[in-house]
Image 1 (cartoon, helix red, strand yellow):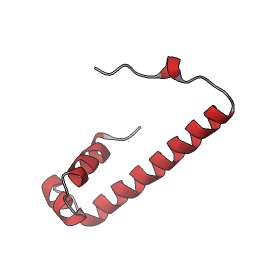
Image 2: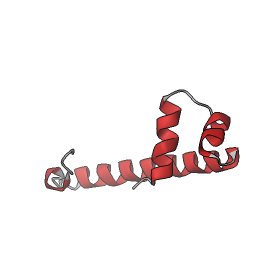
Image 3: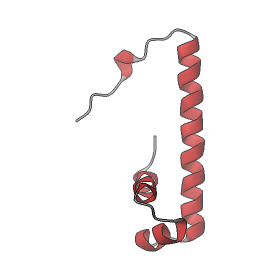
Image 4: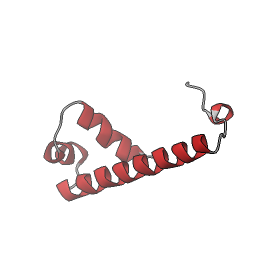
Length: 69
């Protein structure tokens, strides 16, 4: 799962802000933003790998999906 801070970094990236601008907006350092982005990429890659494995094993994921609020 992504943390709230990681989600906020993604939202700000979507709005077109660069790492320095995100750092300023969130009151953190630019290296911290870089670290958040690295963690996001690692988590997404891991999730994709797990999803592909489950699909390869023929495991139906539909019963595990969260309903949108």
